[in-house]
Image 1 (cartoon, rainbow, N blue to C red):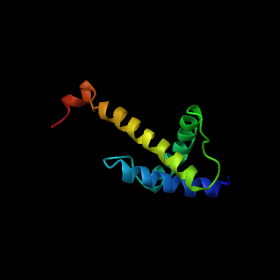
Image 2 (tube, one colour; image 1 turned 60 degrees about the horizontal axis):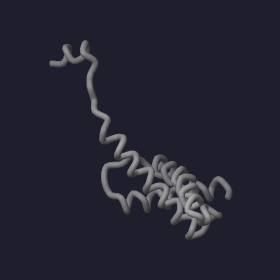
Image 3 (cartoon, rainbow, N blue to C red; image 1 turned 60 degrees about the vertical axis):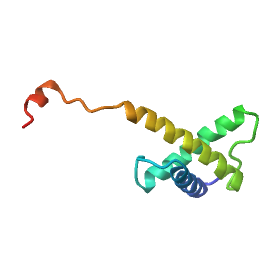
Length: 97
């Protein structure tokens, strides 16, 4: 697959994942494409471990596999981001008005 195919497939998979898993996610079009592209790799690994065929090109099956991987990434992101809280440095906290 060429780079343009990866970008288009990543965009489609990232958008589908964000539609299927609504909520507060990281944001713009570039992040959506990256989530979809990395999701294609993750989805391919998961499907491959289950004995199936991963991403095989620009087709419906590959988009579904990439979407599965993007959904896994979004769920993991929410688990990690949900635990992160802002704690100011003690010296900076004393400067707050």
